[in-house]
Length: 268
Image: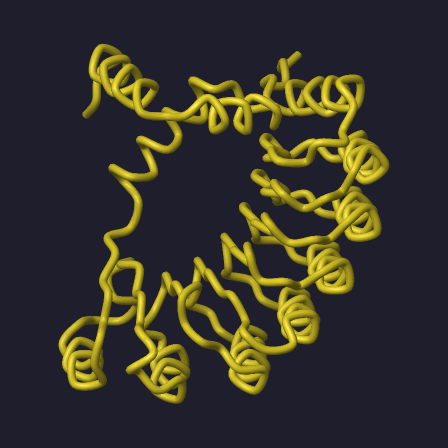
């Protein structure tokens, strides 16, 4: 168990290596710099162990040897693994944490993945970056979110889903009851995509962390997020770094709403 002294020492070490740009990114999200650094430390120390699998022989051996859901380990298959093998492992309830962010995912692969998500009861964390027709892939994943009841985190950063893809994910969020963390970072979703996300926040009451850094949402888009936050009591942190057109007034408004959500409700 880590002590406050240990956490402080780790914080000082991390602060010495982080660039000022990183600290600004964290501070513009409603998440204080120190909190963000400590969160990174905890994720690194206690997050799922990563397992990179580089050949089908290795894949087949580990799939057969390990129990269901890979004991919670994050599985990172390389392109040497046929997607059919990955999909089959999902169907057999072998994987709980899957990272496909570096995997060349075709549109057909993505549609098959989304179809599996509709009924999968094992996968809890998914990181995906489609290489073909990303908006269509996002539409399929968004539709799957409407019925999926086990996925807790979804990362679609750097995937070129655009505003249409963001709208599709937002539509899925309106009905999803399980997702805790979503990343759409470094996608050019613009103010139109942000408006859809803001509208989804009115309906969604499970999401706690939202990454919208580098999404070019502008001040209008950030205001849409703030409007959604007014009726959302669950979201605790939003990452808005690298969105240079958001006014200080809008940032303050969002931070005030996030602080409200972080304040424990007083029992009478």
